Length: 408
Image 1 (tube, rainbow, N blue to C red):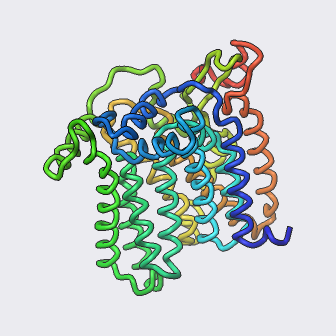
Image 2 (image 1 turned 120 degrees about the vertical axis):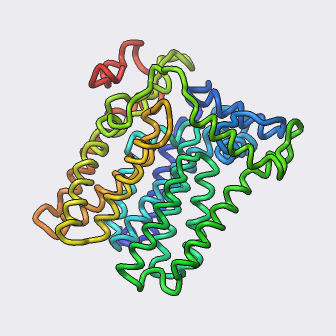
Image 3 (image 1 turned 45 degrees about the horizontal axis):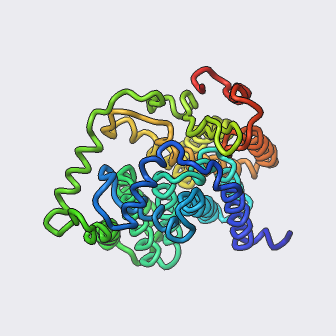
């Protein structure tokens, strides 16, 4: 057990547990579910280099699904394999952020475990959608940039910038993080000039802009080889404008749409699947672990209050990760909102809870983290059947897990 007190063995354990959990029965259901009906056919078309399809989003997420198909076959495992890896990378990114912020394996591991048992991460790691890839690149970017605050700043800042560019190459919803990274660098460098040693603001901004833009543009390389209507240097900019028009168009009303202000309260989760498939009634509900989702809101408030009182930038940063990623949805020009847009903010709740656990470790509440972990793991196990498409006894069994009428 002493080995697990060191950061690397603990990271390896979390990776093994996360990947094993995400990959277990990954091929169930064996049919397409929810938005896989859009992205898996698009990945097949991209793999064949046939013609443009699903042009409202950049290519990278669909290219990663195509890579899974190429490596594991055109079946449910192939559609979702790269998502499972992205989910595992997300867990490790949360762990790395906790370790770099607080330098305590216990604190970092709490964040990683909560990410594993948060229902949003689990479900998105087991479906061929784009959001899991975008989140993984953003989380890894934050981890890399934090790592560069103390050592090898040029390398880590560049890697973080590239990762942000790749996140935008999955979905444009990652664009605000470029601005957040620049603002965080200026603020922290102003308060602590020793952060990112020998990396000035002009060099940091140049790297952030050039490296992220280059990474983003490189994700379009496959489109230059389409058999029909290939992309060219002359059409790549108009293609971006066309994507913007599609992203901002007014869409018809959807049964699972929801308002951004209701996402933290779990007012309207989404059934990705609820039907008889693979010889059994099965369901997949994208709903966050209530212990993490609601407890995380308390943790964010606690981090903010502790920052105001103690000026601890680490706690303030944990709160701002959630606040910045969530409130941006109040101004992003989308005609419809869905709970899965809250995926990234739900990940930052794990960081905020870990931060509060670290803060309480010096008080009489030092063992509170163990109790909370037990509750969070227990809640995850309670919801597991309708997170994992496990066989259910009958078509009405969903009522066991639908706490509110809006969950149906």
